[in-house]
View 1: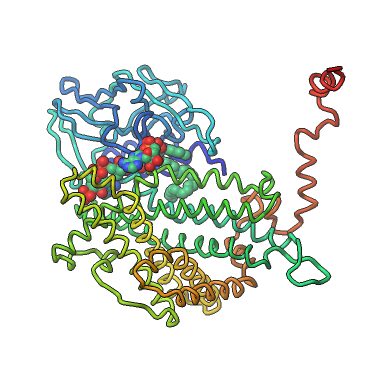
View 2: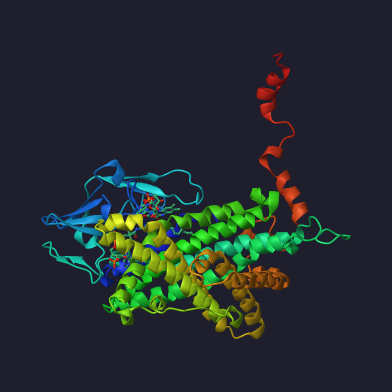
Amino acid sequence: MEGHPLALHDVMFIPALVAQASDEQNKKWLRRAQRREIVGCYAQTELGHGSNLRKLETTATYDVSTQEFVLHTPQITSLKWWPGGLGKSSNYAVVVANMIVKEKHLGPHSFLVQLRDEITHQSLKGITVGDIGPKLSFNAIDNGFLGFDNYRIPRTNLLMRHSRVEPDGTYVKPPHAKINYSAMVRVRSHMATGQGNFLAQALTIAVRYSTVRRQGFIESGEQEVKVLDYQTQQHRLFPSIAKAYAFTFAGYETIRLYEQLLKEVDTGNVSLMADLHALTSGLKSVVTHQTAQGIEQARMACGGHGYSQASYISEIFGVAVGGCTYEGENMVMLLQLARYLVKSVEQIKAGESGKLGPLVAYLAVKVDGVDLEKGVEEYMKAFQHVSRLQTWKASEKFLKLLKSGEKREVAWNKSSVELTRASRLHTRLYIAETFKRSVQEVADPRLKEVLTDLLHLHVNYELLDMATYALEDGFLSSSQLDYVRDQLYFYLAKIRPNAVSLVDSWEFSDMQLRSVLGRRDGNVYENLVAWAKASPLNKTDVLPSVEKYLKPMMNSKL
Ligand SMILES: CCCCC/C=C\C/C=C\C/C=C\C/C=C\C/C=C\CC/C=C/C(=O)SCCNC(=O)CCNC(=O)[C@H](O)C(C)(C)COP(=O)(O)OP(=O)(O)OC[C@H]1O[C@@H](n2cnc3c(N)ncnc32)[C@H](O)[C@@H]1OP(=O)(O)O
Ligand SMILES: Cc1cc2nc3c(=O)[nH]c(=O)nc-3n(C[C@H](O)[C@H](O)[C@H](O)COP(=O)(O)OP(=O)(O)OC[C@H]3O[C@@H](n4cnc5c(N)ncnc54)[C@H](O)[C@@H]3O)c2cc1C
């Protein structure tokens, strides 16, 4: 769980080579990387800049006389800072640097750079590299820093699948300005399934423990109840079970889209890039945020024992919450999606609704009301309505400020909270729709029935959570919201008998979960005692600190 020092080799280094190095370059590097003859990482973020890539300070200046790039980090803030696996494990890196050719700044480009000797593993001359120190989590990964002192690499180490620098310094542009960002888009496409998996682990622990833990009574009786029978406990855990499934389904779709994008880019078609960038920016932000919230609720649902490291939930939280920051800070990424949404509104206003992509076509279609009792399709229309309402409101606010003479960037900043709200609602609609589509495709009738219950729980929970938007313009009445509440409580109770099976179906082994509370056999109490006895503090009855500190204090006459 604490991560693996070679994780970034597989997660970003190899994918960056696959997507950005030419076939000829990959003949030299890819097989070696796949065989782990060389170990690499993805070094982009700097001490002074992570979000704003256009301001990266590391430069790669082309020297036409030697046909080399000179890599340089001119000041402290230019040091690469954060890349996973960079500090100690990697001997190579894909380094993102601002490329300068014939004094022209050509923006961020990726280079393959050797950092350490392949035999001795010592850092090479001109390179300063090390570990950045302990973090909230991921402490088995050596996130590192990296500086270059006019460090030279061959021209051919610029990754040249999409753009090139010829020996004489002629620059051949890529087919899309942001094609060099593909390694990030890839990870973002995988994050919904990855985060769904973290959420699923925490829920497995909390749900299993909630069937072992007995406390209090619902009705007076002989035996105290399992805490999972409390409606509040179900409300804490079951909507997150639905989300873990929903995120996984949404993630499968974005992974498929990314694979399709890779193929299309190779044939020169970059039309999917903007859509996938917008979609994955929103999805990574909503999913990581909701996952962190869900894991924290799972921890609290385990009461005091949830706070013990024996639960292992705090470890899962630490790793998962990193996703709110890495691969693009969540607010920054929500604002990327918002750009796309505002552009869509502008297209509609210009009478070009026909040009809208399938995921935003609903922004042009007004719905007057819904009959929620007719089922999930009507809920989808309600989600569309609230997302459309907020997207139009936020866009109009921005466009009005622009019209009043504000600079574009200032108008944007003044509208940004509303814009991020629109992005979240749009993404939650997408998650609900992929959940619905995925459940429709399930062939096994018994499985379909249980997943349909989860889908119903999800749409009722989500709609209630968005109620302010739906009430704002009278789209939903308070009696409709009462119906949503009743449905929510109905599905909590309906899911209860299947709750343990739903988490067991994820098939985490005890070794994976590392949790005393979430043990498959349910023998929690005896193992908690064994776990406590194994604490290093219990190795001796009396600690050395007693002689050193306690006794002098206790014997003092003051
Ligand atoms: C088997 C695979 C496994 C994968 C597993 C991955 C995750 C699994 C989950 C859990 C993990 C499990 C175990 C853990 C193991 C390891 C940990 C995993 C990963 C951690 C590694 C982390 C790595 C990193 O963090 S790398 C650094 C990431 N950095 C960022 O994300 C920076 C964010 N900033 C940006 O991306 C950009 O600066 C920006 C915000 C997008 C702005 O870019 P800029 O150039 O300034 O452009 P703009 O002027 O704003 O926009 C111009 C125009 O371009 C459009 N645009 C921008 N980007 C893109 C793009 N990528 N594609 C297409 N279009 C783009 C933008 O929208 C705008 O368009 P417009 O003008 O039409 O509006
Ligand atoms: C666990 C972990 C692993 C990482 N792994 C890697 C790696 O392998 N390789 C790599 O290169 N990097 C890696 N990173 C770095 C990571 O990608 C960046 O930290 C991340 O992109 C955020 O950038 P930042 O640190 O500059 O945040 P900042 O941009 O400084 O964020 C600070 C605050 O400013 C706000 N903000 C910034 N810009 C804007 C804006 N335009 N509009 C509104 N608000 C804004 C943010 O929302 C945030 O609230 C990793 C980070 C972590 C935590």
